[in-house]
Length: 563
Image (cartoon, rainbow, N blue to C red; front, side):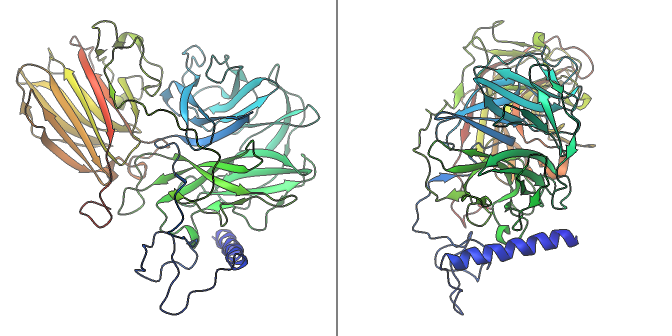
């Protein structure tokens, strides 16, 4: 506790000096300055440590730049192009690869782990690092399920990527650093540096621990950079919750000794400057030098659903500018905090065309946004058995079995959304069920069709931990059923409809019960399709005709439900 308070005091003092240097005078009595989160015209004294916001400045981009569960981002540049990867834990394909030309707009182009033969003993992918050297891309990470640390390579970041090269480095979150003399080094959460032969994955030097961090718990995610003759070692500390932060040290030799930045942490919202910020838990960062010589940091943070610290969407990729003068320390966005609405100048923006909201399942394969839980049983999914439909056939497995259930879904990326699908499913036995669900770390809220007393019914089921709650069953007419899940930040609503009938709401639940604070884990909510025979293989298949996901506008501040 003493160490944490000391870090915060140093950071607040440095931030205060920065504000004075910018000529921002203290507020006069009764006339507080505009602060982050405070509406124009006042409305309270605000927070003296918040960055001062000029409401006349236009928003240049918004955080997160990649919404939804895209955590532990790492980035590299090749010419005018930028490539970014994130952790994926139990979801497959693993390690999404994004492309951008402005660091603000990103397009998913592939996965580094997209063949079941790459990881045959299971997968649980922690933080990743992407680097480019001599025409080759390297992605290095940890599979905590089996094998430990490994890297894969590619000449095209969209793939294909190689089979893993396993290395003996301990810890998690490995980083690769290519030095000017041709040597390559690997470092992980142990902060032990070793030289590595990338042709074989062999560690060719003794290890040396470089740094102990600043005293924050769970120090991890190290990255090494070289600038102005210094080696900079940056790391995440404090755990990936509210106390998260990013710290940095430097040395004239890659082997140390490393001296800590006296203004650490360089990024955090755990202090007064970040108090009340809509984005919390910021950290696990990587820095990239843009083609115009500017510096930028990608990192993750989470947005709460209101009424406390609960977050549902997961840890999301954010962006901030970095000022890094010669022979000096990097400074993130002026005072080490970020906002949702950023006003800093950007690289020339080059957005990608928006993706269609509706998917009709007419293609030969699913889009890149769709994922499975662990390695899928391919026989459970088909786009060819009935053209224009996605067919799921449930196995004996359920999500609670922590194996490979019949589930395919996409990340939930918005607090306000409507998701709709049309399903044809006629269960033959009482154990068979299928529908649309929200999922996070094994807990799930379902809108399902099943058989009850020989009749086909629809039901809403909420399952988290040992708690299971079902709505009243509703008898269905023959024919397709539209299933609708609607999110309004603090709530999820589950509805159904048939034919031209309007949707009927069956249940509404507080979204915080699906938050990471409630159900645990490091992921975020998924929205998708699920089928199971609950201990027996299903004989009936579920045919999904189409799926539509629409982002809804948040209500105006002060309106009912705008929390």
